Amino acid sequence: MSSAPNIERLYDDHSPALFAFLLNLLRNEADTQDVMQELFIKLARRPALLENVRDECGFLLRLSHNLAIDLMRRHGTREKNYNQLAQEPMALFANSPDPDEQTFRETLAAALGELSADQRAVVHLKLWEKLTFEAIAETLEIPPNTAASRYRYGIDKLRERLRPIYEEIK
Image 1 (cartoon, one colour):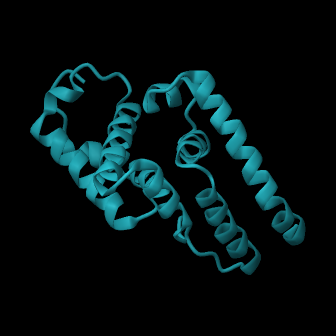
Image 2 (cartoon, rainbow, N blue to C red):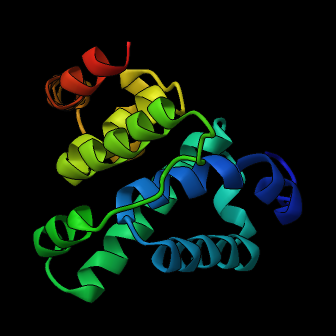
C-alpha cells in the first residue's frame, strides 16, 4: 500500500479470517478479541507498518500470530498454554440443524484441539485460508518444508480421529 491504511477497510476485508485463525490458535474468544484489538490499534498507531506490504492478509496473519504468541508468553509458558487451551472445548463452527453434520462439526473442533498449536495453525491456514506452504511459511516465519510436514502430520491425526465418525454418518 502506498498511502496510509484505511483501518476500517482492513478490518472489513480481513477480520473474519484473522478472527477464525486466532480463535483456532488461542482457543479462547476473549483472548482472540484482545489480540484483534491489539492488532488494529497497532496498525492505527503505526500506519507505516503497511507501507511496502504486497500481501495484506498474509502480513496481518503474521502480525496476529506474533501477537498471539506474545499473549501466550504473558500468560505463562507457551507449551503449557498450548496444551491447556487446546483441551478446552471450542465452538469453532456454526451449529447445524442436521444432527449428523453437527456431530461431525463438534468432533472436528475437538480433533483440531488435539493437534499441537503449530500443526493447528498450519492446518487452519492451509484449509480455511487456502494459503500455499510458501505463504504459510512466510506467515509463521518457518521453513516451507516445516509447514508442509506440520500440515501432513496434522492431517494424518485428523484423518485418524475423524475416520470413525465419518464412517458412521456417511
